[in-house]
Amino acid sequence: MRRLFCTCAAAIAAVGLLVSGCSSGGSGAGTASASQGPSDEPAKVVVLATGGTIASTHNEEGAVVPTVSGEELVATIRDRIGENVDVTVRQVAELDSSAMTLHDTDTVLSAIQDTFQDESVTGVVVTHGTDSMEESAMAADVFHADPRPVVFTGAMKAFDDPDPDGPGNLADAVNAAVDPQHRGQGAFISFGGDLLPARGAFKQHTSTTDGFASNAPADAQRPRALKYQPLAGTTVWTIASFPGAPRELIDHAVESGAKGIVVEGMGAGNVGTDFAAGIEDAMKKGVKVVMSTRVAQGPVEGVYGGAGGAATLFDAGVLGSGYLRAPQARIALAAALATQTDPAEVLGQQ
Ligand code: ASP
Image (cartoon, rainbow, N blue to C red):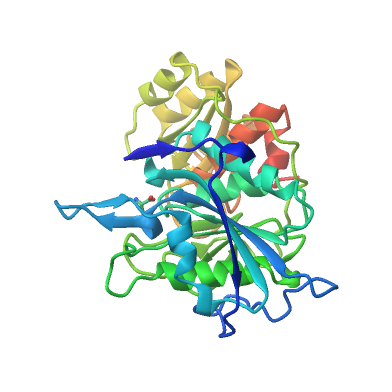
C-alpha cells in the first residue's frame, strides 16, 4: 500500500486532543512532568503520522499493511502522557517505510519544518516504519536547527497485535518531545524504552521490541545543521562489498549517474583489490565515495594498507563514515551533495 498525503497546511487532516491523563508515560523514555512552558499554557506536540507497523493491521492474507490513522494512534495514549499536553495529528503519509524514496523523505522533512513554523509547538513526534526510520531520523537531524525536539518512533508489532508496542512507544516519544532537557539536541529515536540520538542509531533486530541501538560514542558532537534543500534527485547509492566483489558494481553505479557512493565494506572499512580499483576510478570521475562497514558496532578506521585497505583508500580520498553505518552515511552524503557542503562536515569528520 502506498499513500502519500500533501503536507500543505490546508490539506492536512488535523485533530486536537487535550489530554488529561496523568500516569507516567509508556516504558519510560522521559516524562512530561517538566513539560509545560513558563506559563500554564499546555505543552503542544504535533504528531506527524507516516505509516509503518505502528499504523498497520493484518489483512485477510495475514500480511501487515498500513491502515490506521494518526488520530487512531494518538487515541491509544491519552492515559499515558502528561497532564496538560495538547496533541495534534497531521497525516503526512501512510507508507511502509521500506517503500519510501528520497521524495518521501523530503515530504517528511517539509512537514517537520512547516510544523515548527508555529512558535507555540513544543516538540514534534514522527510515527514511522522501522525499516528506514534511521534514514529519516538522520535526515531530520541533518537539517534541524530549531532547539525544539523532533522524536521518531514506531513499533515492531502491528496495531491489532494482542500486545502492541506502539502505544507505549508513542507515549514515550510524546513525553520526550515535551521534556525541556531534550531541547537543542536535534532528532531522536524513541523506541522500546530507549531514547537515542538519531545520529548513530540503527535498527538492530528484525523482530524484537528493543528494535534500535546506537553506535554513537558518548561524546559524539552534532555538526551544524544545514539549510534545507530537497534530497530527491541527488543520486547516492549504497553498494555492499564482499570477498571477491567485482568492480562492475561500482562501474555500474557511475554509469547510472550516481554522484555519490556509500560502500558497505568489511571489518573496519576494507574491500578487495578489484573493487578498490573501481572506487579509485569512480573518484577520478568526480564521484564522492564514503566507506562504511557491514559490521554493526565500532568505528570505520584506516587501519589496513594494501589495495583495498581503508588506510590506502582514505589516502586516495575516500571518506570514512566514522560511527555512522551505510544507511545514515548515504543520507549524510546526499545532504552534503544537495547543499554543496563538504561531505566530511556532514559526516562529522571535521
Ligand atoms: N516494514 C515496516 C516499515 O518499516 C516495519 C516496521 O514499521 O516495523 O514500515
